[in-house]
Image 1 (cartoon, rainbow, N blue to C red):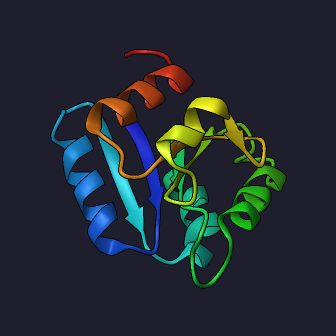
Image 2 (tube, rainbow, N blue to C red):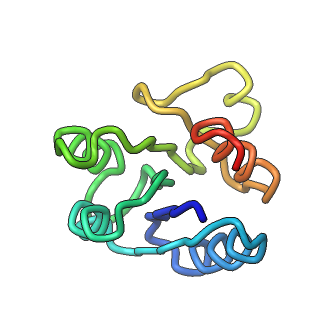
Image 3 (cartoon, one colour):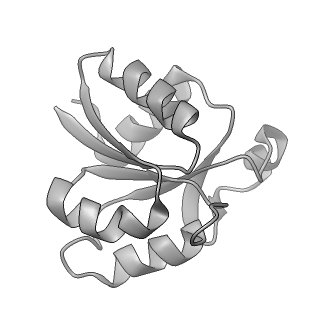
Length: 123
């Protein structure tokens, strides 16, 4: 079972994504709504992939991604930004934001699973 860490300050969004992904029976999802907890949570949970919002009140997602990349135990974990600051039309023209792949919100279950499979390979 794939382990997904979902970091977003919107608890309604993270709950919906968690329930949707876990409903497939393929994923264990841990949601956190405080970006400052990301590094410690990722070390404890050891996810296979991290979905990370960019705009959050405490700390910017780009800064969180940079701190994850600096940690030798976490740097190999793929990070995908989930963001509303880039539209789906923009996403067709751009592959990355700040060097990281991204999905534009709102996002469908098929898009999430496709992204996970693209970065981790199908199970």
